[in-house]
Image 1: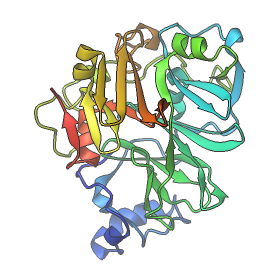
Image 2 (image 1 turned 60 degrees about the vertical axis):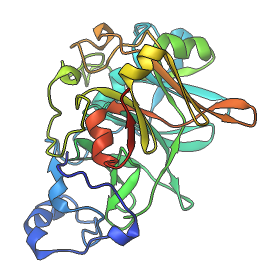
Image 3 (image 1 turned 180 degrees about the vertical axis):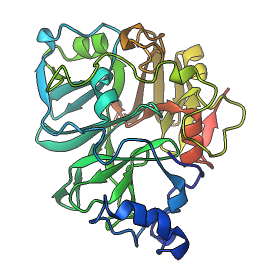
Length: 325
């Protein structure tokens, strides 16, 4: 995780190696001999160990799927990341993503990485083609602002999951394209895409799939391994819907059911379990389903959004706009 509220500000913020930070970096070099630590966009003391080592939380690099009609172990209200590209529809259940955090996949001929950081409740899909090169991502075991720090296996640069930006290494300053997806209940995805497929574990026995190792986390008073400022006027663990540098509290959206802001339309409907509440995900309290769309050419189109916690949005967008009421 991390401490400060520094958000990435572009190449002008690139750091140079400081002898004062040498001890921290030297501890990492043995595990990361291919990472160029001379290049970084953040202060190294913002990066904390989350506990696991490099790839200690294993990404899924050869994902397996079954048809929607064959999936028999998902509760109707369990959360999944629903992704549709070029007519292909795939669901990635949080019961699996919680234990792996990254899925490297190809859908509709497009290389993507599907990511989920449980400590931020941040589910984001990225195009993993960068400057004509297809990258594959893994977990560093590090955190910044309580958020997953990923790495690419080509240059071993480190990437901030919440922003999709490289913060350490050769690719520092590069940014991945976020792709529209929905954090939705299993029944909603299945109803929208009965011809779709759903991710299943490569080996059912290696993790306690369906169980939440962060029991009660999203009702705790404070986030884990976070030392930054807290947002004003809202509980740090309150859910917000973030679109770029704007966000709306879930309480506000839930009360109205629909919010229109410029060309955006945000809607909320009941019927999705929190993945971070009960020990068993399918028993988590109802936090509802959010859809964010944009008016374009006379139609509504899905846009990238994130249902995250207020402290996360504030940490990465301290000057962003957060509507509470």
